[in-house]
Every structure is written in structure tokens, then in C-alpha cells.
Image (cartoon, rainbow, N blue to C red; front, top):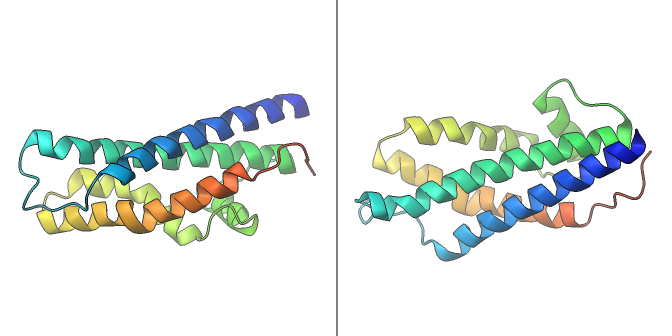
Length: 149
């Protein structure tokens, strides 16, 4: 079982790192969102890609956290909040609250149509949340999967 958990955690670790790399590619090339200059579908498309990559990176990180938790502790948390509390204690994430907000951003992007609100959401992704995910990337890269409790 430990071998299977090691393989799963390793595979999920790589998926998270790959998703984080794609997100970083979008963050590196996009300017801050300006609702006054993003007025056509072609201009909106890179920001839609950013949103998708952000959501994928967040979800793949959570999937890695869950498999890593099971590998290290032999159990999984009942809720995402419990999982995030544990990952915060392991210093993989900086803030449970921030991660709960990051998970919620998908619904806010889909349902917010007012330009100023959309700008605020993209600013969160591009700056605060993007920074958090890059710190998480460094922490995931440093994870040693050769030891389990």
C-alpha cells in the first residue's frame, strides 16, 4: 500500500508542478487586466486561459495535498478545510482562508460581469493568488517523498 501511495503522491506532485508551470507562463506574459482595453473575444481569450490555468493549478495542488497527506499520515481529511489546516501546519500553504477564497474564485469569475469586479478577480489571480501558488510550487518541489511517518 505504501508503494502505491508513494506512486500516487509522486504522480500528483508532478501534475501539480506541471499545472503551476502553465499558470506561470500565463502570468509572465499577461499585463494586468484592464477592462477598458479588453473589449473583444480575442482580447479576452488569454485571460480566460489564465482563469482556467489558475483553477486547474489550484485543484491539482489540492489533489496532491490529499495524496501526500494519505502517504504521510495514512489517512485523508474529511473536508477541504481540514486538509488545508493540515497542509498549513506542514507549511505547504500560507493560509487556509486564502485557499478557501482561491477555490471560490471560479464561481465569482463565472458570475461577475461588471468590469470593475472582473478586474479585481483577475488582479487577485495575477498578484496575490499567483504569488501564493508560486510559493506553493517551491514548497512542493522541496517535498521529500522518500520518508513517511
